[in-house]
Image 1 (cartoon, helix red, strand yellow):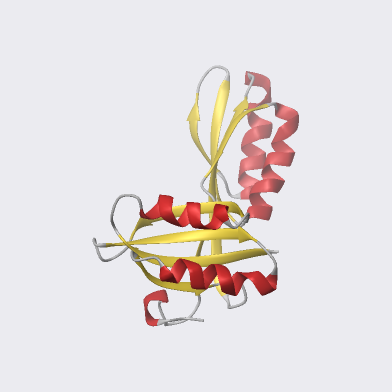
Image 2 (tube, rainbow, N blue to C red):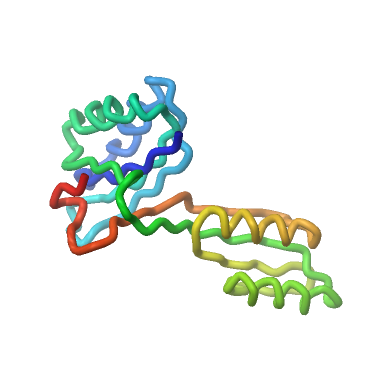
Length: 166
C-alpha cells in the first residue's frame, strides 16, 4: 500500500540522501519524493510516498524520526489531506491537430506553456489520476516527453505538520 509521509527536516546537505538510504536499506520502494523550503529558511519539508504494508509504516516512521536532522514525521495517508502533482507533457502538435490538443487541455484545465512548429508543452496540476488520464488521452497525438514532480500533500484544517498532526 502507498503511504504519504510529511517530514520536517533541518535544511542541510545530505539529509534527503540519508532519508532515502534509510528507506531503501529496508527494501521499501519510494514511489515519489518532493522536497522544498518552508516558511522557516532553516527547515525543509519532504513529502514522501512509500510503498509498504500497513503494519510496516510505523517502523518506517520511527526509523525516520530517529535521524538527527529530522524534526517531525507525520503520516498523512489516513487523515483528510490535499494532494497534488505537477506534470509537463511535450506532445507532437502538427498544425492541423493543434485545435484538438487545445480542446483537450481546456477539458482538463491544463495550460499550454510552450508552442513551436512541431510540439506543444502542456502543464497540469492535480491528482495523480487526473494526470494519468490526460497522458492517456494525449497518447494518440504522440507524447515526446513527460516530467512529473511527484506528490505533495498537506493536511486539511487549521493544524500544521509542525504541530504534530497524526
